Structure formats: structure tokens, C-alpha cells
Image (cartoon, rainbow, N blue to C red; front, side, top):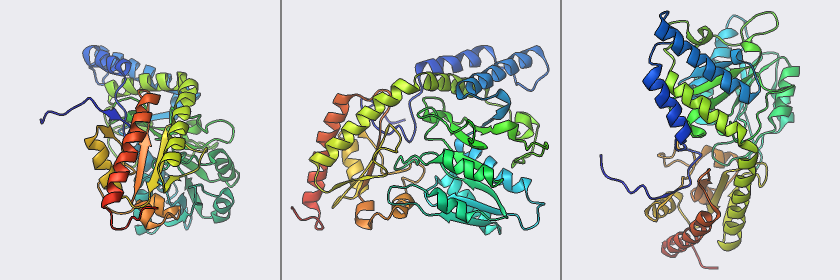
Length: 401
């Protein structure tokens, strides 16, 4: 493998996060001492199963729920698919009752799944958002029909960081007797979850967004994923063994799950202080960029956003060129979602909020993390201003004001 310079400033925590040392230690402990298959009936397998269930209990405890409400998956994307396609499978015998509501700014894991269902003949409503990326709960309520079986609205947007009024929307959904799912991959461990009272029925999360390992996720199911009459909300989308309450057939990734549990424990117990710290850094960054760089624009809501997310657009600048210049200067940022960053197409999120193409092409997402400091962001802002100035000087579309 080619040698790389790792002495960089990492500002792309929305794409993935470095594994926390305590998480790595928890995983190594399992790899070394609990190597059994949790489904095996011998002593080694039983010990591994105990470790698996201890991890489930840890995550449930910090989330404020019961262990039986947690199903482990291989990723947040798998959890999204399990929720959405699982509800469709569970309602396929209800003639004519196949309608799903989602938003136009969902992560591809949800958006692509809904478009797949649409091609299969399922009726899907894609709700618009306002210029700040917020879904109107009234419009969502008006979209509900007697055929609606599922509403899936993300908790916080992965590109622009806008946080949706999930509690209000999930109450509307519950009152209408409709299952409500939220993709909480970006918000899990960063802000409080909408689980209590009128909280969501289904929620997806991923370990690698909270300093855990890649390749591990979860699906939260309120009430164990069951109606009061014992009818399941979802059916499995994969078939095989009876793992994870019969919903996810595959040998559980016990070391990865142990890492997820430790990462969740750290994230939730430090959430209040870290949320405040990152929010202060975020606001400082936003203020400095908007004040010091002409023709800069903040995408998303100014305050109703993730504490670590700042998404900007700069007139007269192409986002990918800006990203590469910053990368050469030692800063890791992104132009949007890591899942679609290699595509040259304009972000569907920025299109949905009505951003003009000239600005959408010049977007930059900065997502800070636990290692980010005020001095890092001050230096970054100066380098950002310099890079933008250089690119504008070369652009035939930019005229000095």
C-alpha cells in the first residue's frame, strides 16, 4: 500500500469517524477471548452469546430502551432496508394498502430503496422541504391515506445537518395508525433520540459514525416490533438462520457489536458536554466563514442542525476543486454525502432546498469531531479563504466585487 501522510486535520466526521481506543480494546478482548459462534450450544459458544447479549443490553440501556428492542445489522443501510422493505413484506397481504411516505432529501439508503419499491408497483410520496431542508408536518399529515403503511423521515440530514421535527411527525403517524421509521445514522449519539412517548416505531443507526467499527449497525423496534395483537411490524428481507429474533439471518459480528456497545456507551454518557462543545465550535466556524469570505452561503437551518455540521456554498467556486485544494493543504472535508461524493451530479439535497446550480456546485461540508479544536478551525478558515480566493481568480465566471 502506498505510504500516506497521516498528519492531517480531519473534518469529515459525517462520513466516518476514527475508532476510539476504548472501542478498539473492547473488540480486541472479544477477538482474543470470545471467539465462539453465539449460536453454538457448546460452552465457548454460550460465552460468546453472553457477551453478545451484554453488548445489546449496554446499547439498550444508554438509549433508554429494552434489549429486546434492538436488532443488530451489518450497517445503517441494511437497517434502513430492513425497516422499509420489512414493513412492505409484512403488509403485502393487505390488498391495496401499499403506500409509503418519505422526503426528497433522504440518504440514498432510504431514497434508493423507496425508488426500488416504486418500480415494483408500490405507491411512494416524496415530500418536499423548505429552503432550510425541513419537512412540513402538515404536508406529511395531508399525504397520509388509508393505504399508507409506512412513513420514513430522517432524523438529521447527512449533508446539510438539518434536524427534522420527528417527535411531532411521529405523533401524527401514530395517531393515524401508520408505522414511523427514522434514519438516525447521523444523529445517533450526537443529539437526544425521539424514542419516548410519541417516539418512532423504527430507528436505524450505525457504529462507524460514533467512533465505532465499520460494518455494524442496528435497528431499534419499539415494543419489540410488535402490534398489541402480536402482529409483527416487519418481516425479514434476508433468509437463512434464526438469528436476531429471526429478522437478520447471519452469524453476529460479536467483536464489532462489542465495539458498537462501547462506542454507544461513550457517546451517550458524554453527549451533553460534547454536544455543547461541538455546537460552540460549529457556530464559531459558521460565523467566521460568513463574515470573512464574500458570497458565502450556509446550507440548512442556522440552529436546527447537528452540532457538528456546517455546509457552505461559495459563489464562483467548484466544490470538487475546492476539496482537492484543501486536501493538498492537509484538510479532509467533503462536498456532500460520502456515499455519493464520487458522482459529479449536483446533490439531490441541495436541489431539493432550491439552491441555484451555480451555488450547489460550490458546496462544502465540514463535520467536526472530538479531536477538533478552536485553533484547528481558525487555521482552516484562513486556508479556506485562501483557496477560494485562488479559485475565484482563475474562474471566468467570477467578477471581483
